[in-house]
Length: 355
Image 1 (spheres, rainbow, N blue to C red):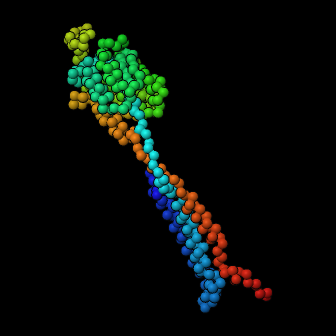
Image 2 (image 1 turned 90 degrees about the horizontal axis):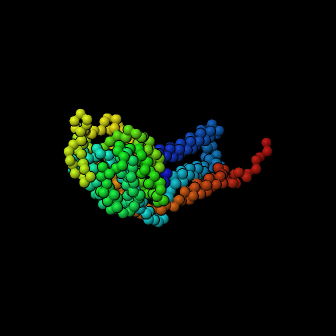
Image 3 (image 1 turned 180 degrees about the horizontal axis):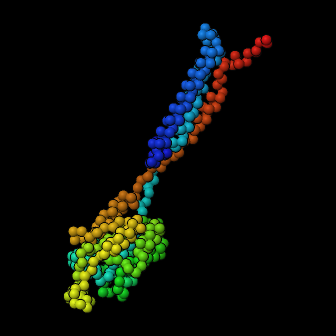
C-alpha cells in the first residue's frame, strides 16, 4: 500500500500537514460547539434540572454525530492522498542509446600536445568507447570546413573504421565548421526512423573555434529535438606548433608562416567560451583533456552508467487506485450522521401541551 499524493512529490509534506491541520480544526470546532451547548444549558435551566434536560437531548447521540463527521473528514483526506496497492509487476524494456560522434578533422588536430597526436588519440579513444558501449548505435560526422557523415548503425566496427581511415589532410575543405557538423548530426538523427524513440547523445570532439557559423544555436536545436550535446575539448591552452604531415601520415617538419616562424594553434578565450556555451545550450557537459587523454573517458563513464541503470530493463510495480473505498465510507458516515437525531424519537414526537 502507498499514497500516490504523498510519494515522490516535493509538496508531499505540505499536503500531509494541511490534511492533519484541517482535521484538527474540525475537531476544535466540534469541541467548541459542545462547550457552547453546555453554556447554553447552564443559562437555560437550573443545575438540578440539567439531568432531565440531558435525558431529552442525548449526549451519546451528539457524540455519534460528531464522530461521524470527524470520521468522514478523515476518510475524505485519506481518499485525497490517493491510496494504491500493488497488483502486479511488468517489465519495462531497455531504452536504446544512439550516439553521434562529431570529430574535428582540421589540420590543427595533428598537434602533439596529446600523445601521439590529437587526432590519433581521438581515434584510439573512440574505438574504446564504442567497444565499451556494447548495444548502443553509433553514427559519425568528420568535419573541417565541410562535414562527412556515416549513418546510425549497430556495427560499431564500421564507425571505428570510418574514423580510422580518414586523416585531416583528406578533408576537401579546410577550417572548423562546427555548426555545420552539428547540423549534419541532427540530420542523421532525423532521417533515422527509430532514433526518436531512443536516448540521443551527440559527442563533439574539437580543439577549435567555429568562426563561420553559430554552433550554439545548432546545439540548442538538437536539445529542442530531445538530444543532448556533450563537448570534449581536445588539447591544451598553450600554443602548440603545427607539424607538416604527408599523405602517408608521416611528420616531415613544422609548418611555418611567410616570416619563417613556426605556426602554432591555441584555443582563444572566445573559443573556450563558445565550446562551454555549446555544451550548455545542448544540455550536456564540457570535458577537457587531462593526463594525456582527450577527456572522452568521462563522457564514456556517464553513458555506460546510464545504460546500466537509467536505460536498462527494469521491473516496475503496477499500482491500482483504491481511493473510492475510503471516499465511499466517508459518504456513508455523512449519510449516517444525517439520520442520527439529537432528540430521542419518542421525545421528538411528543405532542406539545396547549397553553
